Length: 488
Ligand SMILES: *Cc1c(COP(=O)(O)O)cnc(C)c1O
Image 1 (cartoon, rainbow, N blue to C red):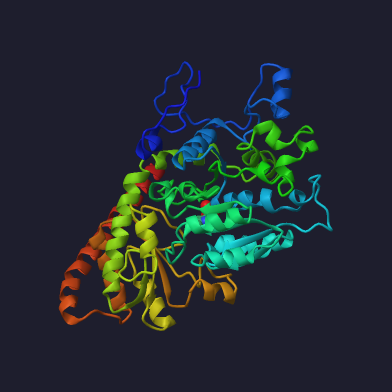
Image 2: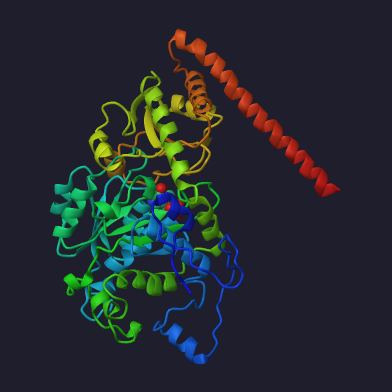
């Protein structure tokens, strides 16, 4: 019997979503299935499963029980009809786009031809660096073309549409400046153009925003970040929110509506329905052929993390808001960008669409030259210099040298990334310790505050130092003990 538990709210779904009644062993915690292959009772069963006429796990590249549980849980959290997990967020972005944009989808008989161009994408010009690499370099090699558009100007997206446009792509909270696009307006523009709106919801998570409720058709995640929440695993997911209906424009979407040999001479819509066709193509062709599969072990890490999503994200948001407010008043930081900061151009959308907060990534401009920026970054102790977000630990990044280092001058300018731009991923440490760390780094960089504040600062700096020293001592003690055990 497989009866899905129904969830009344987000926190229940985080813990029970997608869980199905299990067999004779009634383990309370869903088991971790580490198996590359799955067996069959008969050749008949195997034949039907491999022909994809019956649904069964065959080989873990395209699905396995632990990964499937994660897919159901993320789909429920997003209010979607289904999901495909991937080995990374990067793979999720690529695999969400390829079924819509690849050459084979542009011919009536679904065969890629050299003389038929691939599709065209309209994407936000303030996009994650890895996505920019994918779109500008690898997609260009595949003949997929991109027009960059301003996420704050939905009209410019409509103007960018061509007869070959097949998707719009935007992030619900931009990185590194925490920009908030007008998702309902972009969804309207996409639907007027007859294409799906894909929203990368990594920075928001479904706790802060469910893009499907605002009109998005497809949601992608880097599960690596807040969903897993502890920096242990790389993972991604693609969710179909149930709005995309390829049969509404069958000539535009032959890959879903026309019979193809790959799927037994039937169309995917005929076989799997209006809401199963897209995800089936993602899984049975792109995940199957390219192989960026999520391991069951990493799926388990993500499932563990998701159980505490709401309380973690709440804490991340409140701490980030407190630091943004203090940075806003600090003379060493110019232009603090977070929707919670007074005068933020994103405040109206934050109020309308993000009642719970706008996440824990924020940016600011250091008031100094590159040498000052370098001294500031190198003086931080609690904020680790690393390219990740969504971890328990706070991290600092210099986008121009790190996450956004390959961006074209055009995209750097559009994204307002300068040599002075600092990105913070605010973790869940004590806000006073984090602030003390920032204050002492500003001082080390010669960007101290006024003398009255400096007196207060001295005491907090002492606390931060104490914290760091204590941590280092404990670590080296543990290390020494481990060494003893190894040599014993
Ligand atoms: C990190 C990130 C990705 C890529 O995800 P990985 O899990 O690192 O492959 C995509 N989009 C956004 C917004 C991200 O922050």
